[in-house]
Structures are given as C-alpha cells and as structure tokens.
Length: 146
Image (tube, rainbow, N blue to C red; front, top):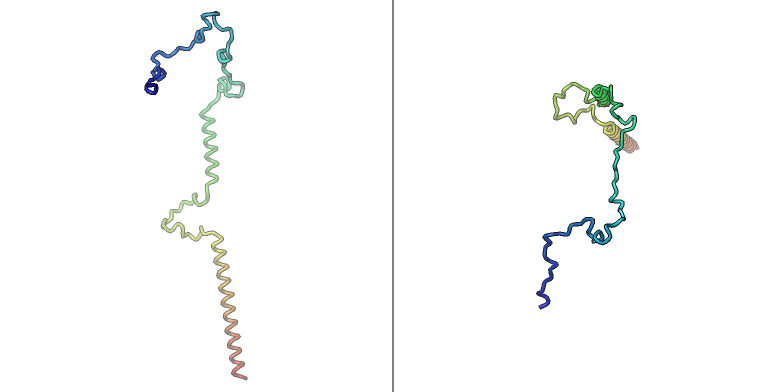
C-alpha cells in the first residue's frame, strides 16, 4: 500500500541544525572562507554628537529653564485671553438660562432683514387693496350719478 506509507519528513526535528562557520563544511577542507559579507562588518560604531546651538551641555549652563517656561506660558495665556469673545467676558448671570437662545441681542441680522422685507411687502399689499377699494367706490358713485 503506497498511499499508506509515510515518509520521515513529517517528523519534528528535536536537534535542529546549528548554523555557524562550518555550516557548509568548507572550513573542514580549506580552513574557512576568505569572503566577508557587508553584514558581517561592524557598522554604526560612533555616535552623533550635538553641535553648537543644539542644546548641548555647554549651551545649557547658566540658563534658568523654569523662568523661560513660565515666561512662555504667560505669553500663551495672554494671547488666549485677548481672543475671548465679549459674551464670555460678561459677568451678568442670566436669570433665565432656559431662555438664553431667545435673547434678542443675539439674533442675527439676516432675521431682521427678512422681517423688514416681509413688513414692507405687507404694507405694499395693503396700499394696493386700499387703492382698489377707492377705485371701486369711485366707479359705484359714477354709476349712481349717471
């Protein structure tokens, strides 16, 4: 039965092959290979040093870092305070916070313009109706007189 016969390839390796100098067996015959890979050479053997102006130890001697930090913080805070809107600066508490969105001072100009336009249109329509009634009354009087 050929299908039932198994090979030894499926078995685990309890003693895996150890890589090294004599992995290819060349060391035994000729005393090793004379070729070296670029990966075998030492690299990155010296560290970068800070240049002048890159906060080296000599640049930091005599500096008061706490004072510099506090100065930058106060400068940043002063910028944010100046940008605060006028509504936030108002100290008056709103007696009716639920009606805060109904405040007429906060209403937009576009709403006012729309209301003005509507009011003008209504006035024109009313004037037109009055003119029509006067004309109708005038025609009725002419009919009575004639």
